[in-house]
Length: 103
Image 1 (cartoon, rainbow, N blue to C red):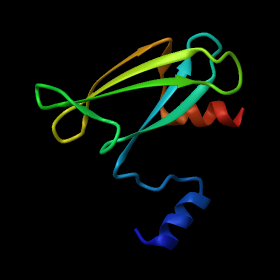
Image 2 (cartoon, one colour):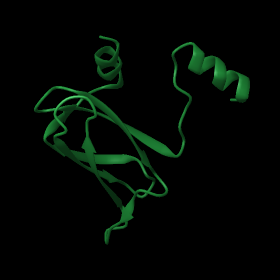
Image 3 (spheres, rainbow, N blue to C red):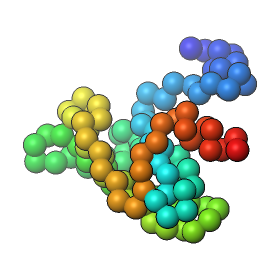
Image 4 (cartoon, rainbow, N blue to C red):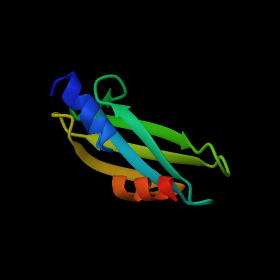
């Protein structure tokens, strides 16, 4: 995808493909705020003894209650998501996030 295709995709409401990042979408369990965050697959991951990777993120919303949401992600050796856990909120889809942002 060249620059003009990327720009066109963004202007049409799409999202350019992110090859080095993994996007997570969560909803705060306390106030319901939708939050989006990016995990850099080459800088945010810690290697574990098994040879797989782990990423821990603490997310805080910016609009309502400022509650901490703890996200723990596990990735296989190919940096593909293999497990996820959350404390203080729920995982949502990108579509649910977009709907919450537009309302």
